[in-house]
Amino acid sequence: MLSRKKLGFGITGFLLLAVIYYFTTGSAQLTEEMKIRVNTELTMIQQNGFAIQEREVKEKEEHFVLSFDDPVKITEFFKQQGNEISLEEVKTLTGFKIGVDLQYLHNTYSALSVDMYPLNLPPALGKDQDLDEEDKAIIEQLNNMLKRKALLVHIDFNKLLSSFKGHIKDIRETFKAETAIKIDLEGATFDGTIQNDRLYTLVQNIKNITVSSGDSLNIVLKGLKSNYQLTGNSIYDSSYNYTVDTIEVSGKEASDTFSVSINNIKGDNKTSSKNNLLSNKITLHVSDIEIIDNDQKTKLIDNTFSFNIENLDINILKQLETVNVDDDAEINRLVQALISKGITMEIPSFQIKKLGYKGKNIDGFSLTSSFQIDRSADLTAIQSNPFSTLSMINTKTKIILSDALFTLIAQQPKAMMLAMIIQPKVINGKKVYEIELKNGKLTVNGKSML
Figure 1 (tube, rainbow, N blue to C red):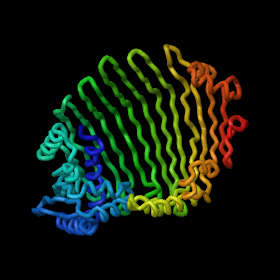
Figure 2: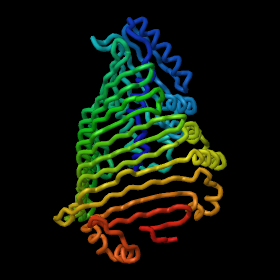
Figure 3: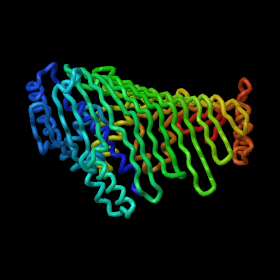
Figure 4: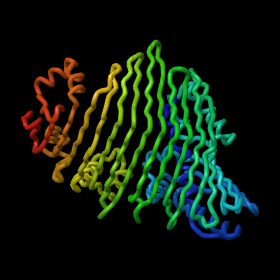
């Protein structure tokens, strides 16, 4: 079966980015002035690895084809705009073409209206020699979708070219495989603003995404809303948050059935830069996760996870993104330089407040952890002797288990033996493990393990 990774090459993401970054300069213009602006932007596009083909210009509209020609230049262009994509990923898009239809002063809001739609699948996709007949049939169906513009993004820019709004055309397709695969995308809309020729805010909404394959697998995502905002002068200073009403996964294999329901998801991702060092903070909250395996139901209630990482050198990260994957010496040099900046990682909170198991709700657990890499850590020494890693990292982890959860875990034979060897602390009726690795020495609740 054709892998989802090959199919999920982010067409709509490229379409959206292409429009936002290609047509964002200028102010209120009449049609002829707008055409001058478009000419300028198309010239810029061609200087950054794209080619413009089949251009037709009329009084109020025009058409052209945008082709991905030079992967190196395109990768650098997207990096400058803050879009994380590797050279290898862009190489798979070489020869990929997008049709673009423009309309000038189309309505009272729009100075420029744009329809963008892929004209072909990336040529690299069809070069896979391992494709079976089913994969080839899916590729043929995808090509038919492209011919009828089933994948299309529409965007309207305001008169000042300072804001935009648009939508992705609803998708309702059934792929004829061994088991028919149905894909629905409904209600995908977006709007945003532009400041200083950069994307400043972006709001996205998706009403529903459904992927189903008979009874064997069904995936449903409902009510996705996300907000992005640039928070500083650098593209590395940004805030992104999102909510999802429900994600449901269910399926059946032989006589076994399973389902997972994840409800009320809220996430937040903030990045910031200072002195060319990048920091990232991620938080995630899920009200409940219900897992049903045949007749066995487990529920995780009030779940929280957060993760922080600091001191990532931006220039080194940029070099790692473009380095030749076969150049081991250069990769080692860059990783060594990255370590020397003093990377720190932290899990301030990982918590499941309650668990529903066998018809009963019990208190759950919490975990906090920190991790630091010694600035002087020698990557060459680690590769020749992996055990030397223990002396180059420092970690602290604290795990707090409710008495009921500890009892439940301890009923498992392997866990019972571990609980007998490593005794927990008892604090306020809860079982506590404090684990520390420092200077190559591992301790649990103050007792040496190494």
